[in-house]
Image 1 (cartoon, rainbow, N blue to C red):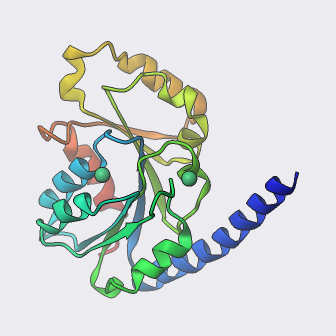
Image 2: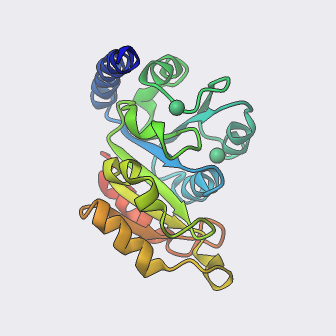
Length: 216
Ligand code: MG
Ligand code: ZN
């Protein structure tokens, strides 16, 4: 019982800071996405593809959350967009306070769109509001098509699901129809995109959705 009480307090404090972050984003006119997935679903590759397609048209920035290294931030910084790395030193999710601290290293007024790449984990990142406008969960065809029912909370709280690595479908047993049925069971209002961040297939619809949310 004590543990539950502590957890509730932690989440309450987190929600307060998340609300401050959301106000900051609103005041600066930045649309913010919290990118969520298990490790290896293709968050960073999708970001690379997205940035290279939108660069010049939309002013992008990235906050990279990782348990240990800055490898992903190095990949993103090659694309010449502002990127801030948060290393959680073992913690399995980002919290609003970590994001708030990272914002000090970004000029939000210069951005239209900010991606926060969360730690690869389908469990607790679902419970921590960072102040983002939309949560986007990425699943991939190399994972089980039953991910939505195994991790229902993540699919329940997300606004968009990107099913990535569709180029690999011929080589896997992944049942796309079953996957989409499971997601709709958990969350009927989830918007689903099918993409291959590697080949670029399906990326146009994802980019159109993003652009429709960015204030210009
Ligand atoms: Mg990554
Ligand atoms: Zn965690």
